[in-house]
Length: 192
Image (cartoon, rainbow, N blue to C red):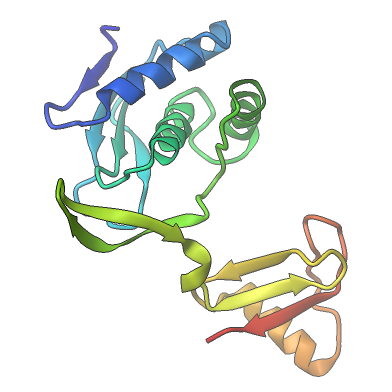
C-alpha cells in the first residue's frame, strides 16, 4: 500500500490496516487510490479524529491517541477514511451512503458524531489514558419530542433551542419538528 503512510509515532497501524482491508473487500468503489497519511491529533482531548485535504488527492487523517476501546478506534478510523472518498468531506450525501453500506455489511456503527467523549486523564500502569464516558453527562440543554420521546441534547444554548424554549413559554408552535417522527410537539428541557 504505497499510497498509505504512517507517522512514526502512530500507534493504531494494525487496526488501520484491518479497516482498509475490510473497506476494500466491499468492492471497487471502496478501493483506496487516494494518498492518506495517518497521524495522531496533537491537542484535542475531546475529538476522536479528523480528516483534512492536504493537496490534490492527499489526505491527512489524525486519530486521537488516547482512544482505548478497539470499537471506538476502528469506528473512528473508518469514519475518517470515508471522508477521503470523492464528495465525502461532509456528513451528508455520499459520505452518509457509504457509512450506511459499511454499517450494514461490516456491522460497524459509523455515525456523524459519537455518543461518547473523552474524560479527564487517568493514570494507569501503562501510562496516562483518557477513559471514554457517555457524552450525555455533559449536555445541559435538551429538546424532547412529545410524539415519540426522542431526546436531543446540546452542550450550549443555540438559536434553535432559544426559539423552541420561547415557543414553549408562549404556548405556540416553534416551527421545528422531530426528525424521527415528524411531530411538531417539541419541549425544551433545561438540565443545568
